Image (tube, rainbow, N blue to C red):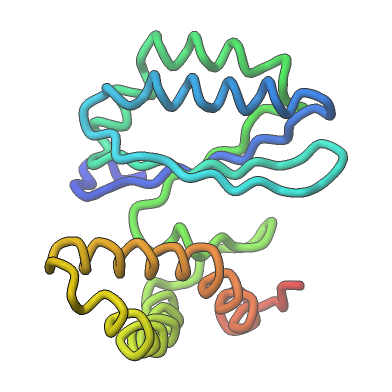
Length: 185
């Protein structure tokens, strides 16, 4: 990770939760996110929950505006206290990744390497162009009477959710052989 990096940093953490500890983990997750929110540069979080019946995996994405502000959070006593509470709830230590750009959508298979940035740009463009076109035809007419900032916010939220949860997982799977040299299932 480039410590001189100036833009936003996304941290991806995978937690394997012990069976029967899911509600305690959810409570822990709410608590640590409340504890992180007053830190300078904190930009929010998202959680993807698996439906696995045994040791479900939670993938947590959180962002800070700069690497320096992320380091302040990661070095804080508050965070350390919350991490100590996590141990009895999970099967393994959490797996962590830092991402500074498009990498957040391009997680390589185990043992694989991150694809070159130019390939990430090509796949993202192939996803963005039709999605924006579709949103302009379908969503824009529905919100055309809304104030500009509200209309832009609603469209952006919808776009980001579609890209993160629906479009990019399918695109990276579709282009996996070209991106990573292996086919993802």
